[in-house]
Length: 363
Image 1 (tube, rainbow, N blue to C red):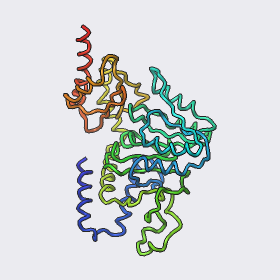
Image 2 (tube, one colour):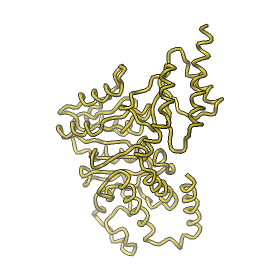
Image 3 (cartoon, rainbow, N blue to C red):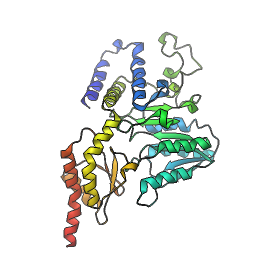
Image 4 (cartoon, helix red, strand yellow):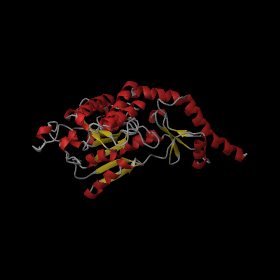
């Protein structure tokens, strides 16, 4: 957004005169950022929100502080790598990583959710997953999964990168043990910054790095050489070093304040209405799209009809100047408030061309 861009430019200009930056400036905006982000995700404890540079960093803090010695770690099939690679470290410690693939069924989303629930056993220690799947927008029923984990004492770790900001999320209702979110996707912020929520299970963990700003009384600059054994309260021990980024933090903060005004519920309603007729049309042409009860409205996959080569579809997108992502045999469509009916017509034109070209060749 323009206001996010301007916040970054102002942050760069501020660095021209660093002597105007006071000790309070290292803390003030991040403290307000925690409160505003907490409003967005329905979190009653802002001190559980920390600034991180990436999802992999946020997940690594979790992996390094798992309060178990063995058992199963459950992952969804084809998750984004940042929520997979950190967990590989636990294989060295005797944990078993189990991947839950979607069933080959017409009711793919519903069956996948049931398969996840059925996979939870007394040996399940953690499920680490998204609120929606990053490649096709499959919606996971996190409240049911949380309830099942409660019965076996397991932890729920969520990568919210593809959902938080556009899809409603409630810490109170879902009760995750960790929610990790990059800032550059649906939070509409810049690259190289994100936000993490860590629940009580991680209150006494060891952070990835031992930086000065995460220690108790670090806001008292005159006493910094009186080294502290203790960390700051709750989750603040896990923040990345130099988290008082005077360029990236104001950018992300501006974006989150705008998202609060727009409201994720309203974003879902807008994108649902915008794409409703288009989804019906795509289904008539043979594209397979998940039932709306098991997909998000701001991001969903359209799986290709048979006989349609992805290369032809990619060419049609290019010539019609349509920007989407191709993930396997699915086109990932991601509408938001900046899209309108004209954009949808261009999308349909591009996705129609290979269908009718194929029928012409058959004739």
